[in-house]
Image (tube, rainbow, N blue to C red; front, side):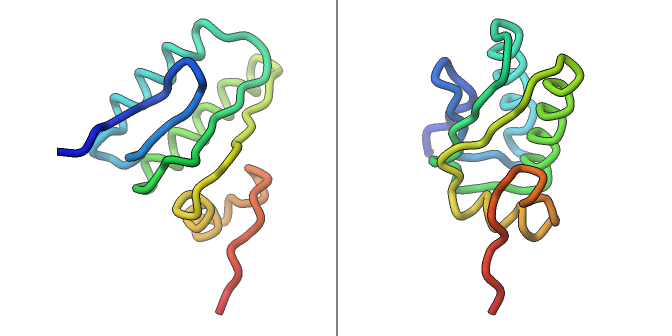
Length: 102
């Protein structure tokens, strides 16, 4: 069984941001955000599994922060997340360069 990490004090997430772990990720992120004020950065370097639930989590987090006048920033975004954001047409929304097409 692989280790599952969610949001933690250093604002990193992963390795699995899929429907199987969506609720745990949401709860962990909500806890971190409840203790944080200002703009928020998430390190996604360790994310190896990412699906539409991960996208929804990032969108909801972005919206929640925007409602408070703050910004969500993604850093060290894994290729898995970059590719998914490009597929969903959200790369620009999260300031991620779109994946090159063949």
